[in-house]
Amino acid sequence: MYTFLGTIIISDPLILGPVIVKILKMASNQQETKGISRVGSSETLRSLSSKVQSELKWNQWLAGLIDGDGCFLVSKSGYTSCEITMGIEDERALMEIKQKLGGSVKLRAGINAVRYRLHNKKGMLDLIARVNGHIRNPVRLKQLKLVCDTLNIELLEPSMLDKDNNWFSGFFDADGSVTYSMKNGSPQLTISVTNKHEENVKHFENVFSGKVYYDKGGYGSFKWTIQGKEDVLCFLDYVIKNPCRSHKKQRLFLIPKYYKLKDLKAYRQEEGSALHKAWLSFNEDWKNTLP
Image (cartoon, rainbow, N blue to C red; front, top):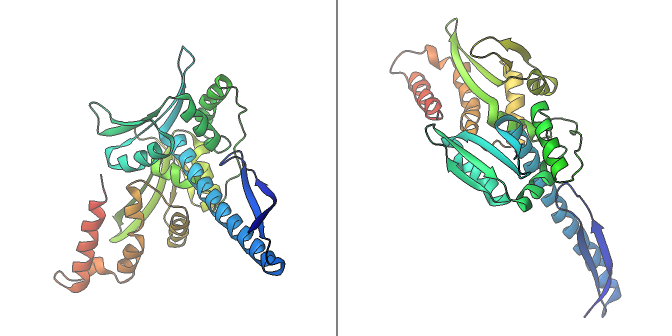
């Protein structure tokens, strides 16, 4: 038999809202009950803490993705919505968002892309609760402000960024790339993020080193890059702890193999040798990661 002792209220309005945990004790054995109560409560709290942390990471990733590939909209009639457009190869990432928030994922006519769209009020309220305080792209912040004003929600300032924030993975899924090219007879690997607004890529420089420069190609944009092995492996370690969800993760996880073969100078070995064959096989895997 159990008697009711009370509750613990855990609150995180940005993620799950209030959670009430019941504390029970066994009436027949007070000494044993104390141990059970402590163990049960701590296990429950650990479980809730893990779930809260997982949701927070996912929300940060979603905010980064929206900052790069999304937009917030308010129609003339006052209806709010959110859209995210990615290449068709990343439909799975958008379907994951749909499973959490509702909405729709549809193929864009005439282009090789898919679009996620959320426009029902309940879903939008859930979305805002998740990403409010994590959006930091100046353009997206203005759009979010209009949505928040329409829904009578206070716009929160962006949280501080560090290597534990999953925002970087979301933004990399949107605007990042991993490439390598031959330079002076040796392969040179580059991780980069490209965006029209310098402040968006500056976040990467501030946390992961590297450099930001203006690329005049196309319509002009700012690009953050890292090429040093230590910096690249540091970013890879971040991605392992804060996973990407786009097809780009496949190429990221080939990086250790790239460095192993490069250190062995497999690209210089005689044709037909085991090392040269391994280099050719690696290149096939590398090409297969492209959309």
